[in-house]
Length: 256
Image (cartoon, rainbow, N blue to C red; front, side, top):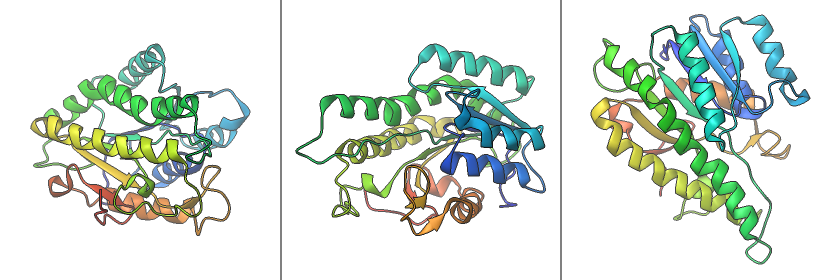
């Protein structure tokens, strides 16, 4: 984890699961980021209490309202982050917010597909677009050569369920809306990696795997605490050779 030396990190969907654990562990680092922007859509609601508890102990954690499907909410969040940064750029954007609707091919609906796609694909696209100037600023002002998560990066939290080649755990759940959205998110990541390479902004699609969270369920084989420790270690090792890749939590390349 110590290889990750981002001065500023932004995590969407940070009130629970992987997002909450990312904020918690980043704040507990010996050399923690100067700013950790913990974004969630209801900072004052009961679901954000665990996040507020973390922020109460760690003043570098700034909780900010962000609804990733609402352009006005995104712009308001950009303004608040910009104010906190006081002229600095944003080093690491982790598009973690996501939803799922249980379904089969027979039961899937257009409403579910649209809702999940809007949050899981359009949301990360709009958030990345909005924070791009701050990411570019961080990259331009960094003395580091090449690409890294400590310099400027977009990490899109995807899923192995988005692999067209493997279709893992099909027998456990078809979840058509979720699978299709993550496949699309992988394509978005590839497009970002091509466009933003000239800015030396690293773009990665990374899956945390099956984890014990509200979304993953208690039958998952590993806790968020354990998995996030590995993820943060992996983020610290990524470089330009990984740009545009579809990786698992250990940095192993997955089939598209």
